[in-house]
Amino acid sequence: MIACESCGDDVEQVVRYREYGVAMTHRVTRWLCRACHPTVPGEAASSETAETVVADGGTAACPNCATSTVNVHGIQNCPDCQWTSH
Image: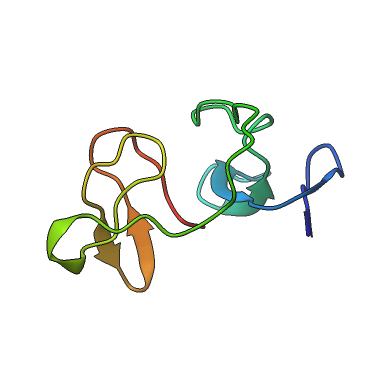
């Protein structure tokens, strides 16, 4: 479990959020749960087990919308719903 830097709850997944710090030229990276992140849809309660979804051809699929994801330096990004693996 990972702690959200905003609410302090232990969650299974955190999402990176970059916001401006004290100076407008400096950004601060924070790791937030889906409920605290301002642009990521909230986490729906589910009885499904957490597993990696694989679409045809072996490409990882987005767990939210099942669209094929794009691998960017080891982080999976969904071009449709903006989901990221980190």
